[in-house]
Image 1 (tube, one colour):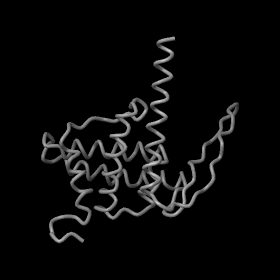
Image 2 (cartoon, one colour):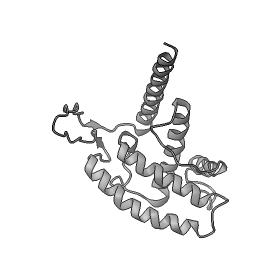
Image 3 (cartoon, one colour):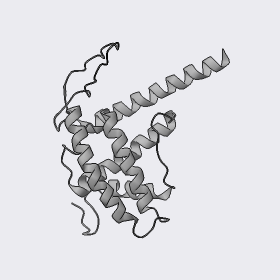
Image 4 (tube, helix red, strand yellow):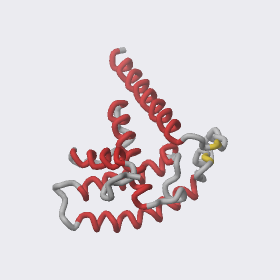
Length: 178
């Protein structure tokens, strides 16, 4: 508990979220980020999602611990984050925060739907099930895992994503040279 009544319990998380307002808001297309951009955006989004979860007391059926392992949750939370940044940026209209609250209300319903579809929970996670269309190969079905340490898993996930993006960039640059 913070010794100061006006400061949240997690002062570092609060400060990192307020630091996000320092740069101009811009939409994020996760498909187009290079490795360095992705690493920054993952960390920013994670700080903000942690702040959101604790500030609004969101249960795991809205924001589960392994949200980062589900594209549908990443895109929804990222869009909500970008909207928050634009509504709370110093250049925003004074009435923009109420628009964000309205959108946040709608987003909570969508997040509940996404979480119920993907099947992640507070203590267990499995990959989102994929529907195979006629003529497609069946995707590898991942198994359910126990969630032991969310922060360690997030760090490993980001490390793997950054390495994957670097490999893609290296292959693309080799193709341009060759």
